[in-house]
Image 1 (tube, helix red, strand yellow):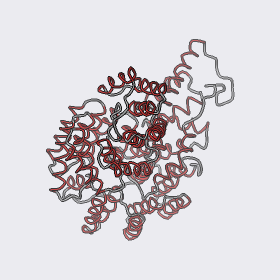
Image 2 (tube, rainbow, N blue to C red):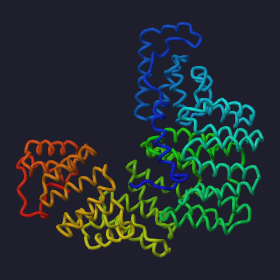
Image 3 (spheres, rainbow, N blue to C red):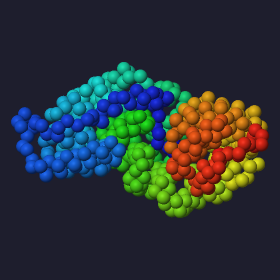
Image 4 (tube, one colour):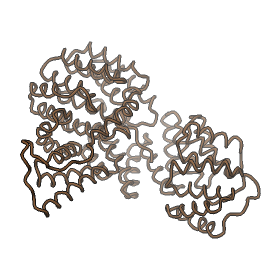
Length: 594
């Protein structure tokens, strides 16, 4: 299922490069191989020796925590480390691991108690210092917060957060000039200019310096062509509070035009109605929460998702009722296969919130992930009935039904979504026509499917998914063979490491009787996606036609072991028993799948 785009807050186009650059450093932050648990206590005296049974229990608990951490089950890891730490409270390794896990899962009070111990072991631990910065801000101890922020290291994986911590703690102490100077420290990091300008605007808005805030906000808008929602919302809110309602309206419309299909702005603006705009930042703690959320949004990439989770948890510690940070947390948890936990976070966003619609939309997707398909569809259909001008809930219904192979029902959902979009005057979306085209093709309505896929291609000529699906469909049907093959080849050029698209190219070559080329493409496809039964089945067919009979049977056997769809099992078993017959002519070869 497609991932929703609602809370991925990007500042310019620097997020991806920043995340990749941090990936290697992030590995180091996860703590390496464990030394002896408690060879010495902090004072250097020999640790007391537990009895053998107690030692085995401690080791087993510790290893369970390690395993949970390595498999990214952070709540379980924190629980195991807590138990181990209760048995050996001065063990350096346990202190460090338990501290990191408590912070990562949002147990801030427990992390706060462990932070001083962690700093005795590792005086340069930036996360421990940040925990104490947050603790001092929450306690309204501005001087203490400034002191802790100043102690944070200027190097290492968390060096990017230091200017934000310095800026907002200084702001808490009434030092606007010092806060500005701190944010200028972002200049030494590539890709941070848009985020720095936005933060300066937020800072001066909070300080009541509207003219300076305007200058920074407008520079932030000019720094990138593509708007993100948080930038749009914050600046629109600023315009509204300063009597510039038309500029706010134009900015919201610009976001809507740039992000066709994202219903966030529409649902938020509808929920707010004509209520007067209120400041988004009411305290220095809110300001640091904003900074941490913005940074977490940039880092919400596969390589740096753990850091995004940590910063977002800290943002919510500072500002528990922060809907965008809650939505981001829910997204991260869903990505980490924690759909139940994600549902729990979404449930904390009240029905009266402008972000309730987005929360409910995500909730429906999580219900489907948990296997509660009927409940998910019922919730999404109810949402679609509530908001007859929005299409997002219907699209998700169609996606769920398509994934469940309920193709006619999916077509009905997509039909209504496309009708609504047209009635609302929305620009045509390639993805909607692609989704409906796939469902129609699977439902056996090829003429309608072909028209939809061609429309999707008109709207997005270089979209590899559309090129691949339409091109392969033509080759598979023996129609438009040359054009279809060229389209698949173009899709491969655009996504050379996509094993599924390479499988399409290999299978198209096979259907055209080009067996050696087919085998070459399919071999690479199985390297990229080794556990897919269909690709292994296709490679077996290609091997058979090139005379590599033993290898063919091996691939077919492997395809069976990988759990193919039920209707593919008997054809693969038949090939294992009898092999394949030679095709009558190119373009008419059926093989065993596709």
